[in-house]
Structures are given as C-alpha cells and as structure tokens.
Amino acid sequence: MTDALPSPVKAQPRLPIEVCERVIVKVYDGRYAFVLTSLATLSNCALVCRAWRPRAQRVLFKYVLLRDKDALYGFADLLDASPELGTYMHTLQLRGYLHVPYSPAVLFLTALRGKLTNLVELYIYDFDDDEKAASPLPEGEKELPYLPIHRYVPSLLTSISHIRKLEISDVSFPSFGDFARFLNALSNLTTLYCYRISWAVLGLDPICMVTRSSSNSRKMFLPNLEKLICFDMDERGRQRLLSVLGPSLHMLWIKFPDGSPAVQMRPRRVAPSLALNLRSFPCLDILGCRIAPFPRPDRTLESLRDTLVSWMASSDDVVGDVSPSQRYLHLRPCARGDFQRKEFVELLRTIGPVVEAALCRRETAEGDLQDQTSGDTGDRPETNPCRAALLVQNLGDRLEWDGWWRTAVAECFPTLWRWKRLYVFPMHAYFPTEEWHDHGLTPQDYADRAARNGGSPPPP
Image (cartoon, rainbow, N blue to C red; front, side):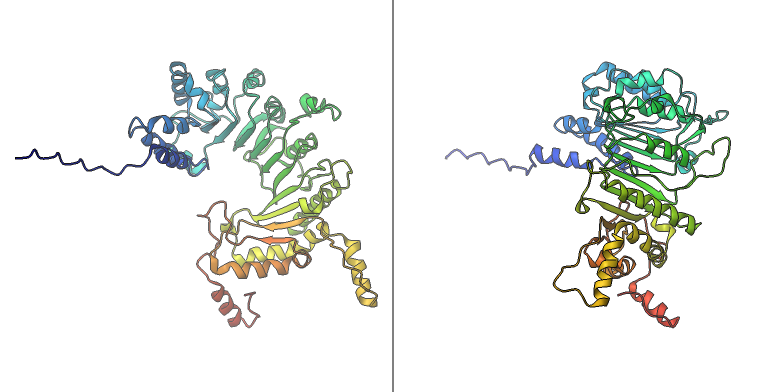
C-alpha cells in the first residue's frame, strides 16, 4: 500500500500588509466634524494586530487632540516614556474649555516644551455651545472672561515658533496687544485662521506692530504669512492686523457682512466702516468672500465695493503686478441653511453690478459701446475688460440643479460670463451635510410656483 500523500493545506486569501497600511492612512480625516471619529477608528486599528500597530500608531500620533489638563499631562508623561512618539506629531489640537484657570491652551507650552520638534500645525478651539451643553463644567466652576495669558507666554511660544499653520476659534484675549504678541512670537506662520476672536480691551497699537519695518522683512509682523482667513472679528482689530501685513499675502478670505466677535469689547464705540484696504497686497491673487444675509444692504454693498476697488488698485504696483489670468474672486454662501436658492440668487443679482464694476475696466467697456453705436468697429477685436475671474462655489446642490444654477448665476454677472471669466460649481461643497433652506424642492417646483404666480419661470 502506497503511502498517502499529505493533503495540501488550503491557503487563506490575505491582503498584503502594504494594502492594509494604505487603508489605515486613508482613515484619518482632519476636518473638525470628523476628526474625533477618525482618531477613534485609528485607535482600534492599532489594537488589531502587531502588523497594523506601527502604521496606525504613526498616523494616530500625527494628529493629537487634547481636551483638558488631565489629557495634556497624561500625554506629556507618555512622551517622557516614549520620546519617539513625539517625532510623529505633526498637528496638535487643543479643543475644550479654554477660558479656565487650568486652560490647556496656556499649560501646553510648559508641559510639552521641547517635545514638539516636528509640530507644523496648531489648532486652538474653544467648545461651542452644543459641546458645552453636552460636557458642562463641574459644579462650582465658571469660565473666565478671557484666556488666562501671563507675561511669559510670548517667550514660551518661541519653542514652537517653527509651526506653519495656526487656527484659533472662539477665543477671547485680555487685550488686542496680547493677541498681537501671541501671533508675533510665531514668525514662521504661512497660514492663519481667526474665527470669532475678541478681546476685552482694544488699547493702543502694540509695540510689536508699531516697530515693523517694510525695508527689512525680518522685522515685519508675520513676514511669511501667505494665507489669512478672518471671520467674525472686531473690525478695528481686523483693520490693524491687515495694516501691518506685508506683500507675502497671496490669499485672503473674509465675510460680508462680518459678524460681531464672541465677546463685546469695552468701551463700546460706533462701528467703523466694514471696507478693507487691500492696496498694500500687490501679490494677493485670491480674495474669497463668504456671503451672509445683508441686514443693511446699502452699507454692506458700499464696503464690498470699496474692498474690491482697493484690491484691483493693488495690481497697479509694477513690482507685484498680478496678471488678470492669475487673480480670482471667490464667492460662496456663508451657510446654505440661511438661504433659499432663489434668495441667494437675488443677493448675487444685487451684488453683480458692484462686482463687475470693480473687476472690469470701465473705459474699455465704454469704448467698445461707443464703437458699436457709431458703427466704427472695423476689424479691431474687442478688448477683454476683465481684470480678475469670479468663482461661485460651495453651492452643494444636487445634479438636477446644475443647469439652473449656471444659468441663474450667469445672469447676475453677464460681462464676466461673456468673456468666460465666470466659473460656477453647483455641486461643490465644503460641508456636504449642509442644505439649502428649500433643499427638498426641484427646479420643476420653482417653475410651477412661478407659473401659479403669473410670473416668468426661473432659468432652466
């Protein structure tokens, strides 16, 4: 009897570890609304098996989220025990109660000093109202009116002066000078995001802003800043900040009309003009405007016009001239839920003449019109009057609304549309879950409603 051959072991299909690692890397999502879920998923990935742990751990420690002083000191102890984990850290987010005596936004500078050598991005977010309701402070504890900054904070910030990006939201400083000194210590910033920043006292211009020198870039305030996003900030403080920035600024995002800061300043004064002077930014090739409902249309339109005119005037600087093909104005709704679709289109129709008057050369358009009326056009080609392009984005709508949006927006900006300098993105959305106030309607519903009212139907 012949010996029976051993039956071959059935091989189980297995994915290469490299494929698993690529999936693990894609789990991470640093957006504010998704970062908590992605970090929890990465923590679970690190516990699956030994093969997954190195990659999951590296991604997990790339973005570190600390909510309170206990988490802060616990993380500091972990880095003391395993210093190599600190080299993984690329982004640090402090997200919790910041206006308390034991604020992690102040304590981290001493607890983690010397351990953030590879830090690139810093996010400082105070809890919003919903988060505070879900996680209230212990009984008997109250929030302070502003961040408990002490006089040594600017010198401690020099330990992370190498970071490139700072996002700070819903934070109140003791004074505008404290805010300015906080930024001045981070001289290598290229991106700055300020949302609902306030201060108890405006005060005089701080020394770090007054002594800046335009002839020496090393002495300028934030000499490397390229991108500034500034929403719902006191107008006088925003004007001060812009007035000391240099020609390195390439992108600016603002809001019309801008809201009030989180905390009202003392003393209260008459609000200044909302217009911004952008003449000192010859290299500013992208200007973004988030559009909110206009409670005072005349004043808001005037400030928008003056801001755009100053932006176009900045291109007259021979040294920093940016060609029309490189300049872009971005318009998008601040919050789609604040509008019905037709309401936002009507708002665009209102600001359309203001935008085109600023972005298009008036003398060129008038000259072409005179030639057409006199019949003396000859073979001379028309001159493109557009000095910048316009992008209308973050409309976040369904595919069936694509044609309606393109036609409706084109009617609001006819000159830019004619010269193919208008770009409309009906389905583009930063936050896909955000919906228009009349989200459930269809273009046919709009047409039927217009027919019942005896008016002309909206654009197809």
